[in-house]
Length: 335
Image 1 (cartoon, rainbow, N blue to C red):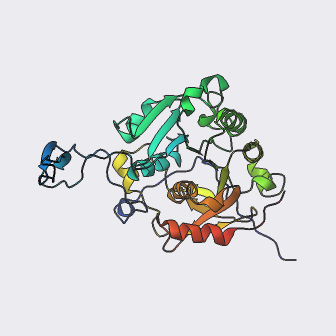
Image 2 (image 1 turned 90 degrees about the horizontal axis):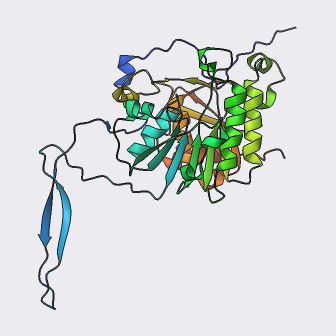
Image 3 (image 1 turned 45 degrees about the vertical axis):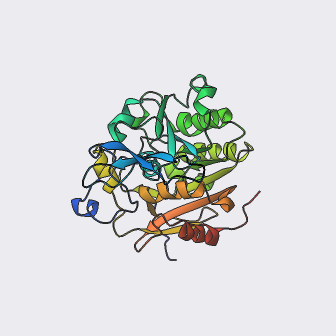
């Protein structure tokens, strides 16, 4: 009788050594990021006087003109009506979500236990583009309603390790992060929210089955599934993303330029499915892009997707290609 070989591929930040290839960091990025810590541009006001109108009055307008020789950009203001609250915004996936929102000129608000990390990663940012709020989802008293004022969308990518590690210090266990934290956050969100995207994990529906039961020895998959169910039953519009084992990063120990130049190497193609059947790996850059794309693709509301990345050319940030991937994966979800 032939034996069956299983491969564990949970979407958990395992304490594995991470290597960053200098060559890969110089290749074409998945996101077209512009470095956020580049030297400031100099601007001056130029008055444009239009030809006199029939009434004899002059139309006078003011516009911003870049006076540097090399720069061509004008003063940047958020071009989107969104205000996206990112929870876990300095983690492996979260930091990529935030950097991509900034690059897209979408307003972001971060809920962080340690707000100083935001400055370390993203530099000094205009409050109009990036806001930082102190709070811990494990403590419902921290979730003051003012944190959610004006928020239109939420991306929650909090998490911890599957097995005991230093990341568990300070009561940072799967139960506290993936269950208590998600439940407290969702309970505090306004009913006007347009979408919450929750990053979960493959294997959450199989935590009592081999080989997943091994990964669930300390409850990580069980608690992620409980968090998913709370989101599904909340009445809020949601999308749940279940990644395979996370690769590429985290980049929290590097400078912002490294973060913005990070690529998925040869594994840029994306595989999306439903039914908790995928087993494999996925780049954190792909997961971050999937979260942002799901905010605006209407038919992803109320859906759960598993996601992997494989060798080949991927969708990048092309919304039409992401729509095709999400649509091709759709199956009737169990009640």
